[in-house]
Image (cartoon, rainbow, N blue to C red):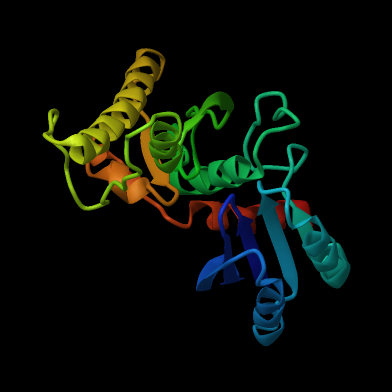
Length: 244
């Protein structure tokens, strides 16, 4: 099956062409480039489509795709069928990207337990135990959101970026480096605490990192984990198979 997979986040749309579960093309679009996405689908002769959207800004486009692909279309929601036990049901407002990432993680890690850390605009944590049962998750501020908050709600703190290739010391000199190092320490400390608490109940599990800031976080505590940038897209293909 040739499928168009769309991961519509808070900033951009990741579009992939997948053939029998393998991603063969990957593109990143702004939301205004919907005609370009349609052109990609037509040129690639796709026959099915799966979408997850957390922006709430492409409803008309989703309806257009559903009309085009009819019975071969799925938009991920809390009611979507998944290949694992969802623990009695996802809550109605659960992000569709989190559901897709969980499905992708399940396919990669089964039968092992897995913690999925999605470092996007928001930072989310979701856990599947070794029985493939969803145990819940957490939502926190993403890297850029924390930096923007420090800049917006203070008078003189600058808006800085955290380079993905640098390992920051525990103490830094100067405002810019102090902001960068403090941000990293906060995110890594938060994740470290969650991992240690989970280890009290689940002695063994895999940690998968995904999202735009996954590379940054992987430089720190998460040396025992690995980064899967297209985890959501991988999950979308399986969700398409489960629901059409």
